Length: 210
Image (cartoon, rainbow, N blue to C red):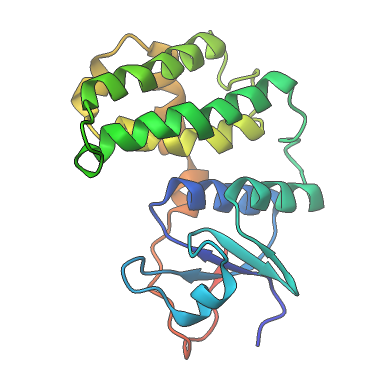
């Protein structure tokens, strides 16, 4: 048994990415269990009420939402002051998790939705990206020269959108957004939290993150 919190994760999932970003920023150590989404481990299904990643178990506490995992980590330790963010940041996160993610899913997975026009959905998502591009202005991050919670909560979804059709994304007039995303992808932090782990099995020795 491990004394560390257990984080069920899936490397490429944007929700799991942002949870790992917060855990890494907080300097916490968790036991990371990589989930195979098409064959989910019984232990994971017994833990996660939604059967979705990420899911964190700390003692008897289970946190099944990625943003709540971010808050759980940063409320314990926030050396980068990610939580020191204006209310506008929470509005951006809410709109990213809501209308933008809905349009992103229908753009990326349009065949799953009846009568879905992916170009219309891409246009809807693009409106939000234009807003982010304006918000960034000439600054490195959304609210200045240092990252805030909104940056790490939103960037994984912008990355997911970009790679649906990277040539099209790169052709758009979003210079601030492009720089923001590229700097994030090229960062040591992103490389750290995107380390590949084998799929977790119940008889494995613990794998610790970060």
